[in-house]
Amino acid sequence: MQKDDSESSTNFIQNIIEEDLKTQKFEGRVHTRFPPEPNGYLHIGHAKSICLNFGLATQYSGKCNLRFDDTNPSREEEEYVKAIMEDVRWLGFDWDDRLYFSSEYFDQLYEYAVRLIQKGCAYVDELSPEQIREYRGTLTEPGRNSPYRDRLVEENLDLFERMRAGEFAEGERVLRAKIDMASGNLNLRDPVLYRVLKVAHHRTGDKWCIYPMYDFTHGQSDSLEGITHSICTLEFEDHRPLYDWFLKELDIYRPQQIEFARLNLNYTILSKRKLLQLVQEKHVSGWDDPRMPTLSGMRRRGYPPEAIRDFCERIGVAKSNSTVDFALLEHCVRENLNKTSSRVMAVIRPLKVVIENYPEDQVEELIAENNPGDPDAGSRKIPFSRVLYIEQDDFMEDPPKKFFRLAPGREVRLKHAYIIKCEQVIKDENTGEVVELRCTYDPESKSGSSMDGRKVKGTLHWLSVAHAQPAEVRLYNHLFLNENPADEKENPELGVSVNSDSLEIIQDGFIEPFLKDAVGGDRFQFLRLGYFCVDNESSTSGAPVFNRTVTLRDTWAKIAKK
RNA sequence: UGGGGCGUCGUCAAGUGGCUAAGACACAGGAUUUUGAUUCCUGCAUUCGGAGGUUCGAGUCCUCCCGCCCCAGCCA
Image (cartoon, rainbow, N blue to C red):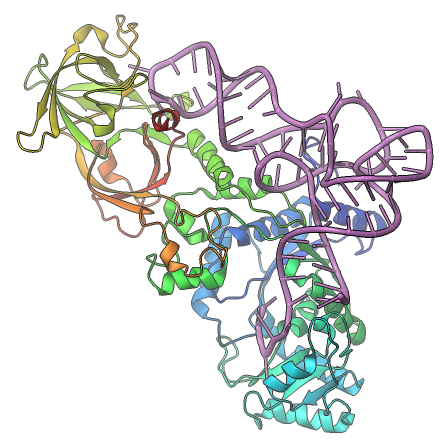
């Protein structure tokens, strides 16, 4: 297989696969799987795994399965299954007819367990959970054998069958593998294979009251599906000997487990447990809150799936624990949106401007290009009149040196329109707040006219007051101010560290007339403000609500800070 | 003091003994610009956790040391 891009380098997993292809280890096959547990929503960390697994399959003309690892019914729900499938599809991947559930293998897994018992490799233990822990030993001291370890095969078979029949309460019996209680690898100290769980399963209902553990399920499921490369995260490295042990003892097809480092992103948390906590404690509106690093949150925020895939491509795959800069994700989002979104004007903190020398009842239709970088994007008309809104930030009564927006006596260009000059500042008598600017315009300076060559430093976005439509605009910032919110030592209480400025709702923003009819998911660049999308949840017909996806890069903000 | 991993630029990350250690993001300058956006240039590791050694030649091989991460669920 030739790489289509000779400049890009291969990661260590690709190297392994290419070596396996060369040696015909799996008869030239590449078959991966993405195996989420349906106990939460997918986040950007899962996207890395999805892109890796599905991407490898595509690259090497192989296949990738979607398999729900649903062996613990007490934490799993159908709601999550649906959401996960939606998210994987949205990201742009397709599992065709290869949708699997570990629970489909419960019969087969039970049979495998019986086989191990018959080989003398597994036994039913009746130590309590606490005793099992005690007998396991510690990191530095070996464990001790359970007194029930040497039961006869027949006795184990009978007991295991009775476990399945529901004769024992939770915690009274477990099935354990007989490996090595002195192993330095704790996973090999007679791991539990089956436990009693008198809980209905979202797919198998009440059929079972014993459920296999992850370790006894994952490898066998991979084996049954003919997976070649079983890619998982680093914390499972210690499980690989166990993964291999089961397949060897069972004498069934052996896929190869490969571990890579999970994604960490600064300013965000990527742990299902903590994300669930944010949802449950209502620090966010739900799993799809636009501030969440979940795929559903990013979708609602306006991140294009292409940008997320690009990000996953760029971060690479390796084995060292690392934390990727959030700025890289934002860069990918901007890069995509810059190419694809129409430029429109919106004013979120309006300041009234009256053009004194512009006729009272005149309205002009000005031509505005939709995307300067893309001539095919076309243009639209925008109304210009005597009374306008500009952004409050774009005026300063007493400007610093490098400020080249509007100020008393200064000139700026209004985008697509005329050059105006600030003649007078009107303030509120009581508060002293600037409430209106009286300006004049230069009729010769109209955009597109022969006389528009005159240069001014600043160009502002604006809206005609009579034509502007009101709209709610939501501005988002990092959910956490701390660069490393996952650090328990720094942030023992997660909720407390949530950035109180992570959401700002602007109720009284204004948008161009035609944006009134924008529909959920539509994406735009609000000139000079950032990229925004129409919120799917809160928007109603004719009254769109906009989410700020990401700001534009802002050099001025950096200068102003100094 | 057990077992398993990892240490290359601020952040990711190529590099599989042989030209001056890729690339991206970030950052800093400059040019163009009716978005302080975009685009375009330019700069940004004499050095690869440290110390020895092998070699004509070491980020890559060997030895020792240091640091960081994971494992003691009947979670995945």
